[in-house]
Length: 91
Image (cartoon, rainbow, N blue to C red; front, top):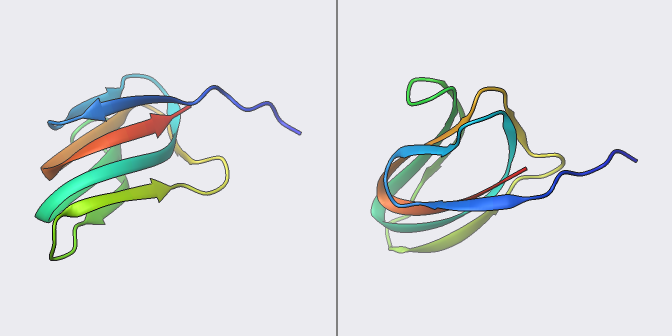
């Protein structure tokens, strides 16, 4: 069995880099207003989209679990937020 890495977290309330090195996205907790969106990219604000969430018609909070070993981000983990905040879990 392969060794797991420690899982860390960071809260983002504005668009920006959640982690500035290669890592695996393990999960998120998203707080959102009506119509809020979260886009996670690998490689900065114009990098490849690896995860996207669009909020339902009512405000709320949703946990997102990424299965398996998570989503590999080879460069960094960048989060674009609109009417939302996100706690990003990575390792």
